[in-house]
Image 1 (spheres, helix red, strand yellow):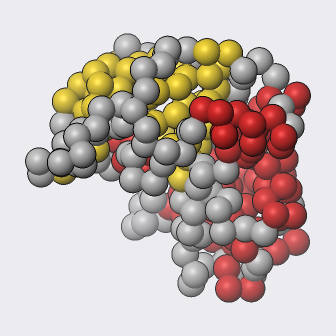
Image 2 (cartoon, rainbow, N blue to C red):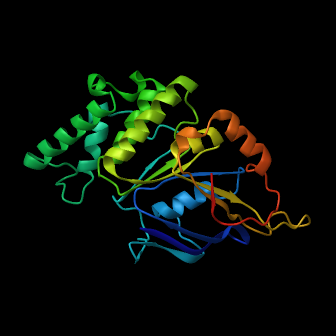
Image 3 (tube, rainbow, N blue to C red):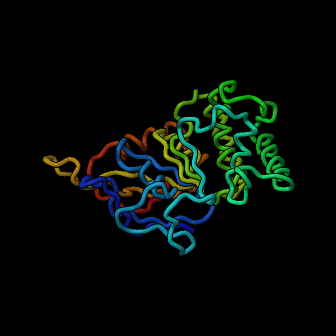
Length: 269
């Protein structure tokens, strides 16, 4: 479904990403890890269409990625990206109101009814039906992030991009969100790319683990080279990988450092 070919991204004369190549089948859950500043979020923004690659291209079903965000690609950020002046239900209906067919910024009639039914169905699925008339300030952090995820699903995206969506949540709430996201992924048959700094979370949720790192270094010019994909691990069964094993893997492979290494592009965990 998604093919990344010789992708590079630079800001001015500073390379962030270089020589990124990737093929991802529909329905894959890709978790992305790597050291801070190695271009993980930049890669997501390019996938979204919020930024353009300096070189290379991304294809979706053999068609070049549109140069701007489209409804086929949804995104959820670490910070709760919901509108504070709208209720929970109104936040979801906004996706329909922003649609190109909306008149004066709002849909009416049958379209409005269909949008309300879809919004109510999503709220029921994520456990927020009881709070549909509340405002974001009246919700807990976990509830706000559920709302942000539901908001991104209102347009039924084929691709869901998650930029550390659970980083600000407590461990217990985070575990609940893992279950919710896994269920939604299966129900909606989406392709997911999720950036995380939690290696255990990456193994737990992903069917494929992608690691960004720099393989070339110049001590005199630390910003001379960008990051690329150094590990591409297809996870056979994420459920069998426990915390001890992920800790051992992290310590052995140094996934969160920028140490140069030559590694194969595909391995199995």
